[in-house]
Each structure stands twice: as C-alpha cells, then as structure tokens.
Length: 118
Picture 1 (cartoon, helix red, strand yellow):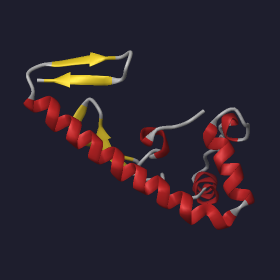
Picture 2: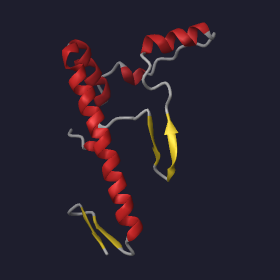
Picture 3: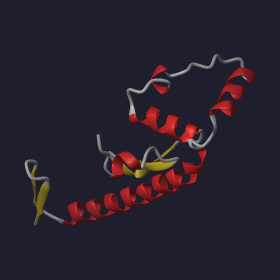
Picture 4: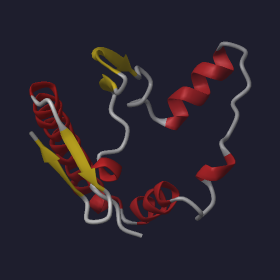
C-alpha cells in the first residue's frame, strides 16, 4: 500500500486538535525511547504492557521499525522524511483552513478527488 503525506508524517510531539484547531495536543513522551519508558514504569511500580501489534508485520509502522533496526544507517534519512512530511501536512492544513474559512461554498467530488470552492 502507498501512504500520503498524512500517513508519512506520523504522530507529532505537538499538533493541533483536528476538531479544535486553536487547541494543542501535546504528547510529551513521544520522543522517549522504549528502554527509558520501561525503566520509568518499573521504578514507579507499574507493569510495562507491550502492544502486540508492535512485534507483528500486519501494520506498516512495525515493518518500517524492523527495516530501520536492520539498517540503522537509514534512520537519519527516515527521520528527516518524517519531519518534512509533518511540516508539509501542517502547511496543507493551514492552507485548507484558510480557504474554507474564507469561502461560502464548498462542493466535494469524491469520485475524482477534488473540490470546488466559491
């Protein structure tokens, strides 16, 4: 399957809440590595729970992690791609938000993937 900018951008440490664009959604632990998170849980007396989907090949994210772990030299390039896609995603969201807020009429053609904005 192919992914668009939205999928390649991945989850951001800080983003806007889609339904409330003026509200930030902050994920403070997103940049932590797994070992640090496990240690914090153990030190705090909490049991670490492993998401079983992380070890399988069903989801793209698991396959990408596996490829990166087997080829660590590509990690900086992948991270750069993810960051760039995140910036593009944010820019597209800003443009679309401005267009929709200044227009009175929007008609979406789902068959051919475009919209009329008046």
